[in-house]
Image (tube, rainbow, N blue to C red):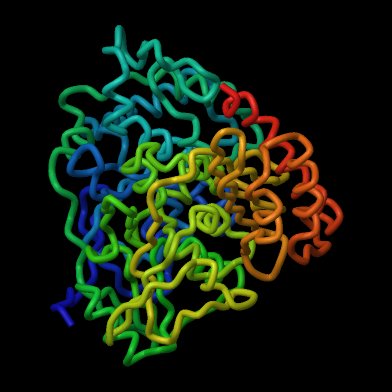
Length: 501
């Protein structure tokens, strides 16, 4: 294994801070609070409220470094060995001795526009807002500020979810406020200008982020390991087949917090270069399993429309900043949002172990509830999507909330319609069986037939009977079945005009 740091260190607000004596399972949230940085709050401990949001320096898409907001309650502190973290306390500029610090522009706007009441959620909102404030392509579309804290943006922005300054409200989709209300928070977000030329966090984006440190940290009979390469990771898994593998930790972090689960050994693979590539070939797109969903979204930039439709509906921006496709598929959850989309895209997974690789169609990957063909010692290295893509696609997520919610039913469509005939149909389903699945009978009911209301209605009846939906607190079986049929009718309604034109 590569040489590891003898004492894990995290740079917090510019100061190197040792991880010890924290246990390997200690979250970034608890690590910070134990050191007096109590602006980082615990609200839900499962990544749904954003009160714990902090900024982390990550490899950038448009610049060497991006400031990325993450849920501190989910990330193991050991996973940030050698990394840089900024909390709400670190955003303000220290004043002269005896004078208070100068508020950050985001903090200033939140204050003057009444964006805080009880204040519990405010530091998390501020950190999420700061990450969007420093997003390089937002700044590229924002006009120069005409005064302190104000910004007048590019005219292409102005829809309800984008401010005139280019601010994307999805950046705050993982932050909840129970007393202030969201209008003044939105007003603050839409009022921030562009970073000043001497803003130290803006200047920091021009330098590379810290390289991930190879880490071996043991305390109280528990070990956290970060190997330096994929080969090392696979050898570790061969030696420790019972180890817990984490990337974004958005699933395992909940297990640690809510169910008090502990692991003898955790192996972090989120920064392995071999798992973080994105390659577009003539016949397929290969996406590294440890790229975050936000990175994939920004790098693909709409070239896979079905994924582009999925991403805004997948949890929240805070979760997407950490979550990975490999992790979402690795859990084998029947209600994960990415499997239906990837099934419709006819994706496959590349599985790797110490002896080599194999490629498995995603339709053959799931074998039971949270079970798959992945063997002990194997990792998902990449996801491959074949090209060309079907031209008619849609992702329908039925949930109780528009954003940041778990699906009751998820349906993904990929159709090839030529001269009014359905030449090819691929439909992925989630939430209606013990595993994500392809709606094979419905596909057969569509292929070779005219794309008409009669065909859609007949196929919708077939789709209603796909899977084995169950009654639970999210939805009844009857409701789930009805939503499957309605989803296909909705697709027909949405696409008829586009296909006929």
